Image (cartoon, rainbow, N blue to C red; front, side, top):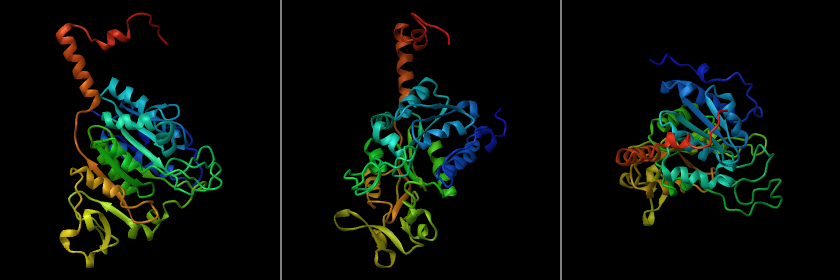
Length: 333
């Protein structure tokens, strides 16, 4: 029997140290407050992080944790989740950590469908190293490493995850506790890799990047909240996402749009809908979709591997991974 868990059971004794006002504080509090719902004890939970401000996350969780090297968190977490499928494994990463040096590790974890929950904190800047442009910074972004404006075209993390055929893809906001918690709840329930992009304000080096969505009353008018099975209507019911010319999705006024042209969200539907929603806004400076874009099922990587090993042992008596790992020259640490 698992005893009743509380937020304090997942809160370490380490002093939380981010810049005052950083969006990471809100995300940390939401995660610590949500985890007791799962009924999974802290010693059966693992958080893995890479380099960046988000990398500190593991120190503040009273669970098992690994602070890995730059970009390698998905690879480390893949090994942990594959070795012990009973563990609840979470990856905490940032837009620089996951999409720059860690890009390959991220897409391969997504395509393999490892049983991981990946939280990508996107503040569109390198915060820990004091304000260089990142893979999600907008074109023309003036930073310490791009004094004349960035000429790089940014990644769209949602579209990237969908392109890698991630089985769960979502977006939420750091300061919207109810929405963030609900997305985390759905991600935790998903079997396989769940990818969650979290718009996270860096109030020192990129303050206000998401104000159109985060701040009241602007957020109420510009958040396009995706709810499975419901028409995509927002801005207090005044605007909607509709099928325009050539089937392209457009933002329109409800009063001027026939009901049959308003799109009904379907997380289990065709990938083209999720892609179109991911590209509905070019930047978070216009109405932007948040919520679960797509979810579907396919075999989980670790399960398939263990099944393969079991069959090999049954047929030939060979394939005992534990025996292989402890053969030859070994030592105890």
